[in-house]
Image (spheres, rainbow, N blue to C red):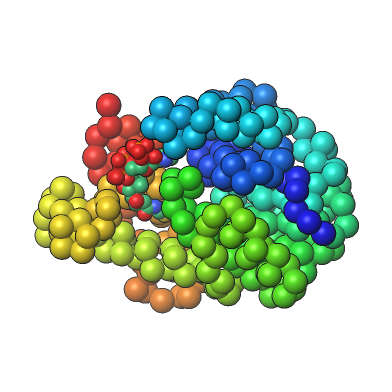
Length: 283
Ligand code: CAA
């Protein structure tokens, strides 16, 4: 089966980026979320991104229009009946994902592949609610999606070789680089990245230095484009904490203990850039 028409569930930061890169590569995309307001807002983000590309001379006005024409908006998932591929980028809650996959399994054609952009939830567990676990896979994108080249491809216990190869090929079609990983907590990227961020937070907690100085250490000493605390604010401190909890619960190893300061910030609602305050203040 050729993948030509896809559904992207979730018109947030990740879903809009995924919809954009897929439409840019010639795929027909249905961008779905719970309300018309959500999907309209998502389309606005894509529009601004494409407009920026036109201004910078990376795309023509005509190309921008063609990409936008390939994106259909929907607030009703039952419209997803004639697609070959679905990627879910909804909220990072197991129960929500289970509900979505169970429903998708009933309405999406036999043979269609169901992917999740989850950053930490087990693909095997999501797949288990469907009658097609061999067609369920993880496709983990990185923020900002239009810029970051990597896609982690996560094989659940039952994911077939054929599904894995098709998704690797789809990833290359959208001009990203696939890296295959097994379904272990945090997969590979977040298992490496998020404990580093947690350690940077411990440095603040223990008074080793300030946020600016810790970020400078990693930017100037290791050539990271952003320091770990700025990156934590960019990802969202609630997400950082939830990934640390997945690692801690999943491996049972105290080295993954979330920093108490991170827990406090989340309790305070200081979630980073999206709430205007995290390790930095945003106007
Ligand atoms: N959306 C789309 N494109 C964006 C963008 C955004 N939010 N932010 C920046 N860009 C693009 C722009 O096109 C920009 O180019 P132009 O100015 O020519 O248009 C280009 O990136 C460079 O941007 P800037 O000059 O503004 O800033 P920069 O050079 O510092 O780059 C950055 C910005 C690409 C975000 C860079 O700081 C970076 O790579 N940071 C690290 C990002 C990272 O680690 N992401 C992974 C997070 S972890 C994750 O996503 C997974 C998870 O499960 C938690």
